[in-house]
Length: 106
Image 1 (cartoon, rainbow, N blue to C red):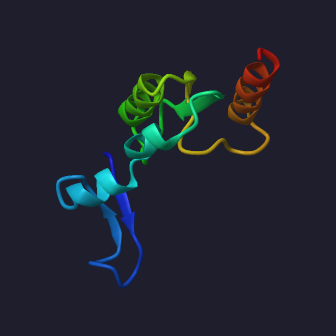
Image 2: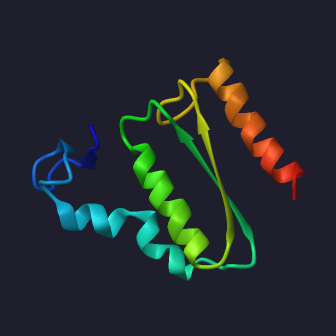
């Protein structure tokens, strides 16, 4: 489930679906700011396919928005990865390899 974390004291704390706060989702989406990013550098987006906080569709939307702005962008999806890699696991190693591969290919 896609979810927006609302901190304590702000309209009820906890995780809320997009239908409850659609304007918050739009406001917080990096894709909404892609046109402001410099187009003369390369971008890397790393997404875990098991991420329950930010769904893959959001990463794909961000990639498209950056590309529409004229920049080079690469999306790497890591199987089994949630929102962050667990330390000392294959996930962390895959995450590191994705970053290293991106940086050394430029």
